[in-house]
Image (tube, rainbow, N blue to C red; front, side):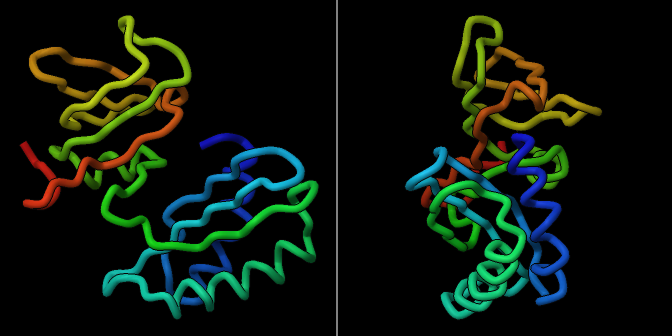
Amino acid sequence: MKNQDLMLFEMLQPVVSAMGYELWGVEHTGDGQGSLLRVYIDKQSGISLTDCERVSSQMAGILDTKNPIRGSYTLEVSSPGMDRPLFTLGHFNQFMGHEARIRLHGKLQGRKNIVGRIVAVGADTVTILENSETFNVPLVLIDKANLVYQSSGYNAG
């Protein structure tokens, strides 16, 4: 998670938890005018549109008061969805054995994109098995990661 995303996560997490939801992740894209703040919430029984509206209303008040984002932005609150983003080592650990799509900030073993099964999670790395090749990916090198969902469900090797 980028520094600003982490700061926003830490600011919003207590509010979301107090409402009975899990704050799954935060993504802020763009700068200044027209940026997007995407917030993912979750709960055991699933997320409804009403849940998103309730959380959005609470967050809007906090964000307007604390004003952590310069310029105008759009707030979007949603469930993690079918192609669930993975933000933390805990997320990767939770979905051990499942297939993930990872985009990197730079290259690792000559690659910027890796799609494979999550086979291990270390102190600061995620190990992905793509076909017969193993990638030990430092969390700080991950730009974006999502589970790969297929019509039969999440692929768990």
